Length: 67
Image: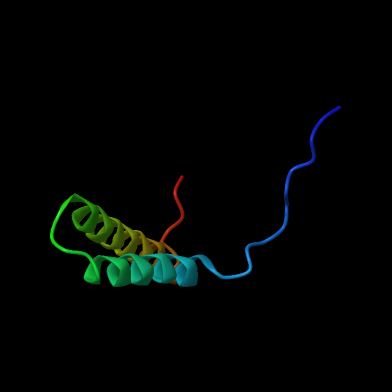
């Protein structure tokens, strides 16, 4: 028997979720001393903010759809 796909929508839009992840990573990094864990959290924040910027750019009106 096939499993049914979960077709429910996330409770928040993607933009809000990405911003929340970045903000949480920056807050955790602020409380840590310099080191690997702090660097990893800051890298996560930067990459998540980049993803949010790309998503904003792609969802902007006037952007042609990929062929």
